[in-house]
Image 1 (tube, rainbow, N blue to C red):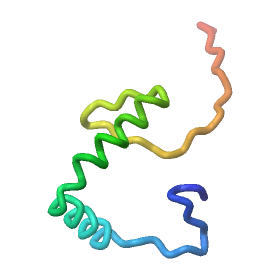
Image 2: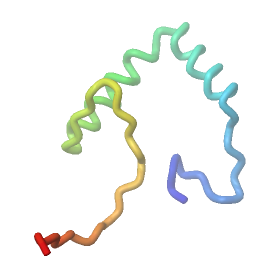
Image 3: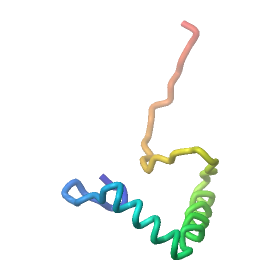
Image 4: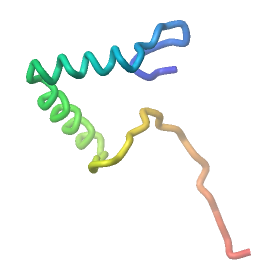
Length: 70
């Protein structure tokens, strides 16, 4: 597991903890700058995020499908 550098043995924060952290960032005026920096990083990697999208952190190789009319 590579998401946020967490391993299987590591504890994961619950939804309330994540929500409170986001609230602190918002009240401190840091949330807009963080999202702008993250958006710039995504654009630098070739990803264009649009509103309403969910981004999965996994990038995997997939076999090319060769569908035919048959």
